[in-house]
Length: 328
Image (cartoon, rainbow, N blue to C red; front, side, top):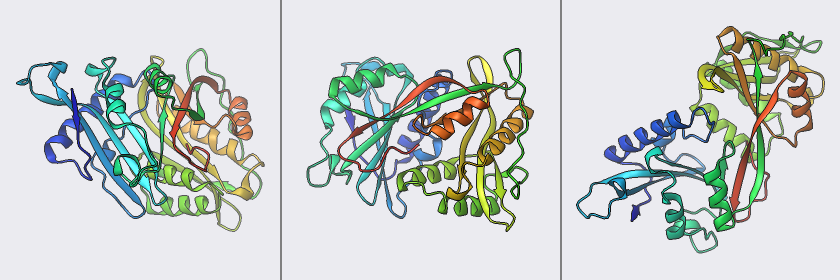
């Protein structure tokens, strides 16, 4: 009933159809906050240390049993496999084909075995992870059916920036000897260099750094960089003022806030966060969104003190052995 074939690069017709599917799903899911695939991933190819594979899933239009019904792409899976064989999965079903068993059929056909020669489906992946953002009932049902364990979680938080529920946003000064510069575009070469220097000194696990670097590569928005008295970068906040609809309000996101290991615990994170929130408010956002690791006590405390509220929980599912904690 479905057909599929792995490829290192989508051909032009499949690429156009997958791009349209990804766009339709992102628009359909925007209010719910479900996982979405970045358009740039549809055209991505393998690069140093990362193997990229695409899997367009096809079926007869409207899941017709007629042999003359045209084949259409009803779902898409994107896989990245690092040098150690650890695979990161993104998966989306077209809104018109949800709740019709497409994901279940795919798992039943290809299985979840990662221990055979060549790894999962001979992609080289010896373990798999997939994040499901927001409480996604389809993801939960699929995980229960096939015994896929949840190994990590994130919280989605929101803060009102304007309107009757907004708490005043007080500017927090950076610690003595540290300066927070003006916001600059994410693709500014000087910003890219500053981000690299902060990440080098941030003591992130490799999977966290790889995931964040990939998101920055595909992302947009602006960055606030903090430097110490020596001119050394000690932290940054990446925020995207592009507005979307969330809770029927105009929302924008703080995408990442990273400090070097030595800069933590002195209040710099709060200074960067409040500066980013002020920029989002000035850009017209009514609420700000951020995702945090609930096991990071410092991040939880900082967000609570800056009037964030928890809205939802995101879940990371895993197949196979993976030594590092889930990245986010």
